[in-house]
Length: 105
Image 1 (tube, rainbow, N blue to C red):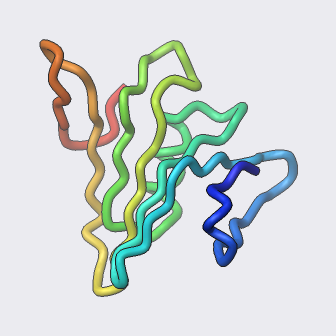
Image 2: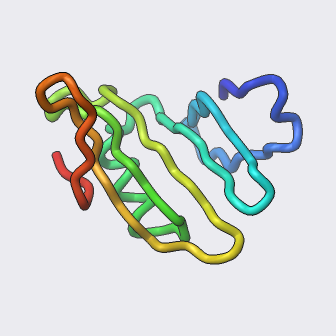
């Protein structure tokens, strides 16, 4: 597992040989956010698993390319005051970041 060394209080759950890589983590009193990848699991499948199995405010499948399982990453937020369960897909359209509703391949 690779973590930002400043995150000493973050104790992630790791099952078997699945090793999540958390590139960044922020905690802003009531909201927490992380960018996550798991080697050997496609980022689309990871985002779908989070959508179906966890309570979250927002899941964004960022810059995923179908056919390239490790492309992009998954951004997740959690709000202690209530979660919307919103899913988005971020992609580049004409050189600009475009967000569409849902988790799209």
